[in-house]
Length: 329
Length: 256
Image (cartoon, rainbow over all chains, first blue to last red; front, side, top):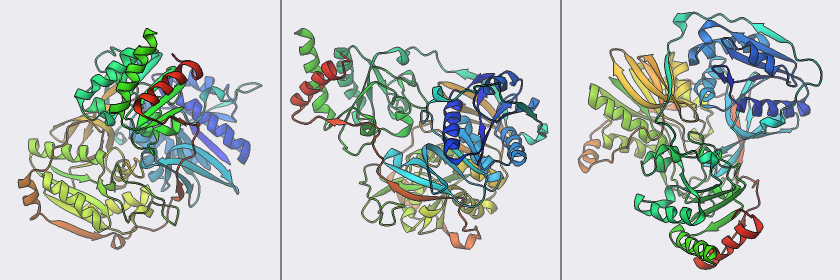
């Protein structure tokens, strides 16, 4: 099997999930046999190609063009389509980033192919790769296979593989080959303007050792004080899933998940959070996870060390009281 | 502005899910359905654009008879008419097959703008908007947090990862996938519900669209995921549970 790994960078800095997908590609090749080519795409990114060449792969393809300086779905699709057509891989792998989800389906469709997106893993059975992804907001998993001829395109969810386990090359670096692509300015319909951050992050939740996080189960803004009291008794910071911040009940800088902060505290206490993928990717690295939820099938329990099925409005005050008692004693 | 908005019907959030005998889908018989929440934000954005710039909003949905309810809800909120692409076996389609069907059904509408939600809460492929753009030859942008329309152009605020955003400009016509939370979707009014009864829902049989049946990917089976962690469930009265948990956090997990 020939695998083409498409990495992601912005302004010359790696998106680290690239190495998670590299790790996935290296593991898959141990089972399927074959070769791995890593793609670096952009403008002035030769240093990144050299960095990537230090990892265990057969070659690095350096795709540079003035029109690829800033990401556009048209530019990246047109360029990568040419790369795929010349490299003729069986499988194209990418990390499932916001940028990839913006262009990868277009790349697949422009080749008349399908894309299996946001996979959490794969299995190799009977000479065939089976991709595992979540459905129904993580309440079920699904085994998905490609139909029809290669190339096949798949993307892996952030955190699905360990980037720090990507194997380096033992000997000299892999060869870096420049691949030229044809692009015209009028083919690019999007005009990217400035990148910016909203108001400065007031709270850096990534540094908090203990977090109490609330989700939809908190039901109303006036109930948040229950979670605040618990957080105070624990000495924890307050965090939330996306719907809470969308409602404006807590500021955006308290949001955990793919569009918020990624945290790995000592303790993560999830109150009324169902555990949709977008939230779980932001907190599953926590050392100890406690989940309180009324639905025993809530996906949050899949990552929880301690689970409590019940009414948070009864359990949270009891827990706050117990913590205050144990502190006093 | 003529705006098409794709709305999907999905199992209700609290619906108990059971796997169907075929193993590749859920048992639909006994559960409730609702409009896919992310699509509600796309519909609201379409209605606001119409209120500002004039024009028409068309709600498009695909699936069996029951999805009419989702179209009716959109009409009650203010969409002008609906297109129902009828297919009882809709769940078997892959993302490309779904998008090809929608593209074929709406290509003669010549929309100025097509909006979709970010992803569906059932299959969650998150590809429909991007695929529609490619199939219809239109530019696109995804994860949109703000839309400003000026003469044949749009200025859009895209959400990137880790708190970053970017402004981009795009010509019309185009396809946008809307980020959840961009607005606060309205509720249907009684007047709106009454008015919706007179609005047209055009039926298009998916089988008549000439979309090839061949799949690019196939869901072999769905199942309750295997736990990656062993969860210890604590039971008892709230007071007992609280005492047990504090004990565990102190002595077993050692996080207090």
